[in-house]
Image (cartoon, rainbow, N blue to C red; front, side, top):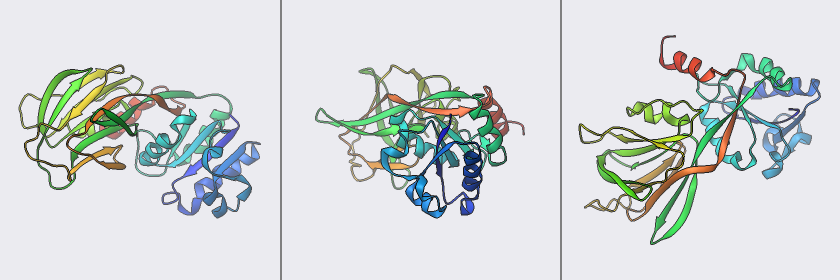
Length: 287
């Protein structure tokens, strides 16, 4: 790899100091650097500035500086370009941004030398349908959540998988997660941890009003349909679909939400084959 697009979270990279350090090192090693135009201006590197698809289509790798939230956002934005992502952690310990700031240069040297792995992470395609008209909503790397937007109050969620009815949940919400997102909201709601190298989905109800509700793990080939139309009371102005905890969409009670594996995947660069379990132990286990 010799061509890098650098995508910093400017609120976390103080005075863009880490970005400057990385750019200087890449320049000394005769690598091509691309930057968003606004960042290029701040760094006085206007000749590196690009916008739109030109920013990604010639790069070999995207260096994302921030935290897991920054990587989630970036992965959705560049999914169509099949561009590997190197996440440099500038926040708290993350599952996606596994390279710490102090190790960034050492990791870049390994990448230039070809000493790295690319992990493909499954993404979800989310759409909604009403009166047989399907409309794409977006992509998710972590999860999608359907819940009320105001005070916590139960709704009824009807779940179908591959046209077959599975269950009706009375709950505060419903989570459909990828293996990557299994350590996020899904875990907090009592769902299982899945190895992100796998391709599957897990459905977890949020605070279900029953003793018997459990998470359901599905294959990558399954299609999930979630309906809210059986609620006796109308919640039309109060239902939110959230993607990766970052994008919110109002949905109508008559809408049916459809979730399936996306044709796109996030490609994360790592130099440690067992990095996920190391981070899992450090973040959730014995430190």
